[in-house]
Length: 238
Figure (cartoon, rainbow, N blue to C red):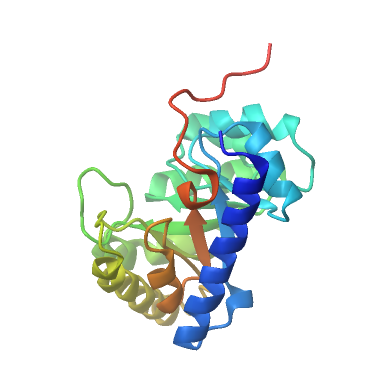
């Protein structure tokens, strides 16, 4: 586990790198939200980041949010960034302020229906599989164009924008074309759907600076803040 000073120092370093990348590319650094990806990290590490002024955290699994949320202050804001199964929608909707991983029409319909039952208007991002990787979730660009009208017909959803996870490349510059494609697709979908899609969730620990340069409004940073992931995932408190 990273010590308190490590996490605090890492957070400040990441924030400074975001500011520098925004400055280089003429973007407003204040418009870029840093989402600290806390998956598999213990609540103590999240509390340390919280003490250092980080309030927004991303988790891949609903179960981890269910475990961690009761142990942390209410001011912590949670985003779900991993795949969501239909049987977990009802549990997670009241706890998260945004779901980044709406990856097919049926899960969008489930979120919409259950949101209505719970009196909620879920804020969501549409996950795009730009490289059509079989190992990745998400709409292909062709599928999102075909189904955008059906998504907008879901009256409880606030569709905020799009998200992508490009193929991993150790050279951050090689991910730039994917970030450009996502931004251009977002612009196209705004015209097609006649509604703004202000959020671009793209960029992780190894490439978030390139993502910021290409217009990211949310960057999902884990290991650059918390260090490498623990080998064991958190378990529910006894």
